[in-house]
Length: 593
Image (cartoon, rainbow, N blue to C red; front, top):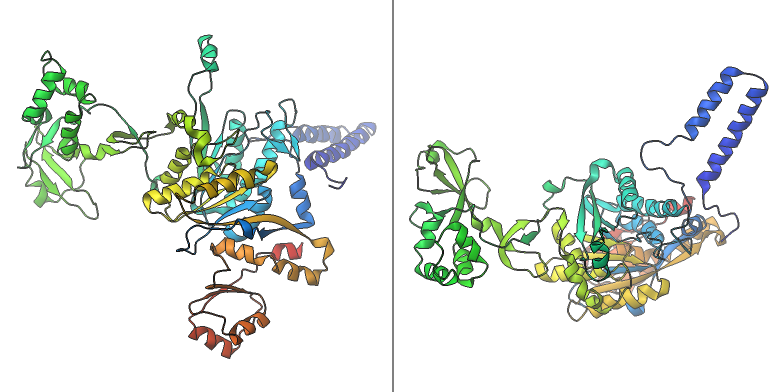
């Protein structure tokens, strides 16, 4: 790097301003200009006053500074391309290089197109987990928070631009930088975009923690996930997650019989001789059958559980809230009876009855509370919708080092955690980005969830190759899972075009050499596929047409300066060719800088 590189540019600007202000103040004092002295002292105070919000000493990065003269580009490592599923033309992408460079290029291809972002950035613990300008930041560094915030601010600002209108970003963090990150994200995404903070239980009080806890210390078992989205999550079709709840829910105290009668749930249970006999054996005949005692033995008996599962649509409870019911329907409703009413576009029917005091109520059935749960061991059972406390993920850590067949000393997250975040977002055809890819868990989770629910999500992973992490961990994991989860992958590396070495009229031609990876990235295609062509010159188009090299129904990505005469247009129409203009914004900004 050049000696002119300034790591704290704003400090120098402020220092210069203060020096100038002090000189004015000094002269005002010499001239005994009391009004000027008072005003200049007030300006000095204001310059030193913190405003509301996050204030830190901004630092500059080498990787950002070099972009002033070196333009980031992608080049493909064709030896690492994976064609695991030749039946589809869709591709995922692994981008090797500093993620600031990758994000800079993704702004050209994916602005407003990313559905889900998950990142697990360095936590800045001071334990050699965070580098700034090629130096590890220790706890003793007085600018450790400022450097981390400068690092995150640049990347999150781009992330905001990449998110789709209803996109969502998840950011893992612990207590070292949680408070600072929350304020930073409020500034970048807007306070109105903050949705919640998940508390994820990632460890238990065991091992060395026991001694600390016994002495009265508070041990850390959880981490946080900040959630931001431009849209209201409740109105963008998110999918709830469910946790298992043991026992029988005594609130479902009624039972709908096939003949239209509503009876007490306990009476329905007592009608089943097998269940009555099972209860006698479990209680040794010493307890009276009631809903409370039935609940007590529910988890101990497969027969009782099966009986309940077989009658999930019959066990019910009263719900006072009812929709607007037409008179011809309400006139049919009787006490101790129920009718079924289908309303509008609602899939599930309403079950309506009349209470003892003559009011109309609906019957909520138990089946609505039973789901395939999202616990460590998934079961079909009584469940509750998960809130912002995500418990028991410490159970996954026992197998964490084996997931994906790769090891990562620090920061590897359970695949179930990432998979459930993606499941919650409910974007089966979405694009998922992780620009702190680490061990590649996000890519693995995307493909695993696709396999489970038939989705067609695609992933983009960004990571540097420090200590060969991209090649030997991230890429290796994506290779390891191919037998179980076959899919296609392209591997791009960051390179640079030094604009100082090219006159203005040749720089564009040089940059055009690197357009193909951006076309592939934006449209998720592989131009080595015969059905896809990139044409940058009129000579190339003429060559393909003259040699009959264009196949029917081919997609051509064509440079906007390539002119088509009427004959060429007819030839392309005859072949049912789809023309896609190469965006002129790929390198337009760099050409004008």
